[in-house]
Amino acid sequence: MSEPTVPEPSLLIVEDDPGLRRQYRWAFPGRTVLVAGDRDQAIDQARRARPEVAIIDLGLPPDPDGISEGLAILDALFRELPAIKVIVATGNGRRENALLAIGRGAHDFFEKPVDIEILRIIVDRAFRLAALERENRRLSNMVGPSPLPRVIAGSETMLKTCRTIEKLAPATAPVLLLGESGTGKEILARALHDLGPRADGPFIAINCGAIPEPLLESELFGHEKGAFTGAIKQTPGRIELAQGGTLFLDEIGDLPLALQVKLLRFLQEGVIERVGGRRPIPIDARIVSATHQDLDGLVAAGRFRLDLLFRLNIVSVRIPPLRERGGDAVLLARFFLRRFAQDQNRQGLAFSEAAIAALMRHGWPGNVRELENRVRRAVIMAEGQQIEAADLDLADGALAPLPDLRSARREAEREAVQLALARADGSMVAAAKLLGISRPTLYALIDSLGLSDDVRADRAADAADPSGPDEP
Image 1 (tube, rainbow, N blue to C red):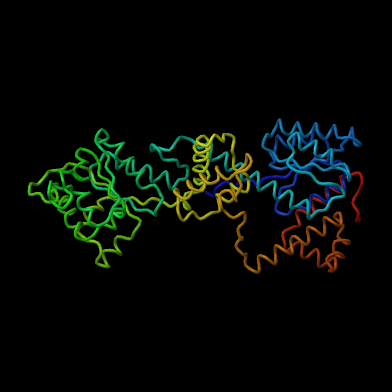
Image 2: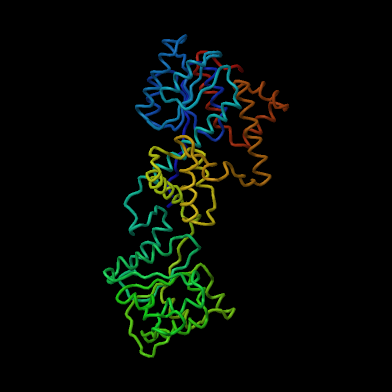
């Protein structure tokens, strides 16, 4: 059974001029255009189709020389659809009327006579903003919180990872977390500890790549008094401190080969010896390790022991990078914004449309850590109440992928025909003349582009219109 199709967001046009209504009907390719001539029709269309964008002529009967009826329709639409983006049309030189409408919530305005190309840009921008806001509402209203403490996630890929962590938490087997730098491996390791039977025990973490090799053995296994110069007292290592809890070995791929042998013995026998010691010390701790490296590649290169990999990799969990987590970048950005805005006493800060788009486009090579740092910077750098893409040090735009040549040519022909029909007010003779082709050629082109139904609908509307069509 095929999945139900999602209707395209529609555009509502409230205009009492029949000629302009016909022109508008052809001016927005790819949009579902709804027309209304008065307030009742506009409200009926809003309730039935729930359009995301509307164009309203402010000068409508019974006040064609004023703006009272246009503003009344504007207010009525907002009562029905609070998130609708309304673009108002005003007479030439009456910009103060448009500004009054914007003060009451209108998104943008244009002046008559209509410039179709400019109007299309305004409408496309309104649809993009509506889509962004719709996605943000979806992410903000996700059903159910993240299943793990301190983990913010809404994407299915990350939620699946969280559910896997939940399943593994009650077990005692070693877990290997695989993921790029900045994906939150330590947070998931803590979740394994907090949700497991050892939650009351210690959680001890050590980054195997952050400690110089001469000191790493002592850090891991501890040392006896006098074991080396400066060893003035007996000191337990991280493994010993994790007794009864969890030991998290971050960046395990950086562990030197000599220490891999000692770690392997601990995993096999459950005992360690401090540096300079002779007495084996039994240790009961769960082992969770993590790396951003390809351990199989390190084994092939002779830099990691295969037997140690087998011991650590009883169960492995891949943590998806931020670029694969759908809208999680925006969810996380809003979380960090609330935190840093409170720290900086800058409550009320919000992301602009361009900033949200930039967050969704960016590839996030540094993952959640990079996102956190960029939001922290933006809270400091933002000059007004809105955070812009530049405050995040992100580009405003991105190049769209090129379509194939055949699709591009077909789309160009479709737009040219629709614009010609709009400028010709639906007249086939005039449209063919504008395109520099014969009328039979235009009919054939309309058929090939799949516009025949639209033309018939337009002609039917013309026939029902008291003003009548331009062409017999």
